[in-house]
Image (cartoon, rainbow, N blue to C red; front, side, top):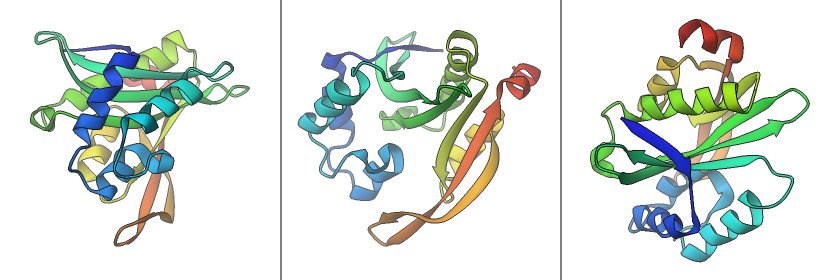
Length: 179
């Protein structure tokens, strides 16, 4: 069982630890282009204080915790991207603890993030982007109701060329049918 809480300044160093000795592509895959490799605490602090905490932005960054172990194992971001149409976006989703991957935790996290987005934040639609080779993530997203809406060829430059991306979404109406 998982619990989501808003991330705090003291949690940021863990994000850097999870990315230590990882490739540039690893960082690009979960964080997009906002950070450069090697990831530093200064970069994470800058994003936290100058983007997340900035007035006028509706960005929620959650730390993912295991309830039984009270362990901080990852992060997920839910942001408002279209205020007038009430559209949110899931991004920067990372299960940082390697031993916690492939155990259904991501599905639990997404279900809770969708609940927060649709019930608490009153979004009408939630979107996300996922690279086409990330089959495990795509399966996880589809398991909670996301559907592929758009395919973007050569969406991001990586170390060995360009990566393709799916844009996926779920509407509040469809979420209510499957929750």
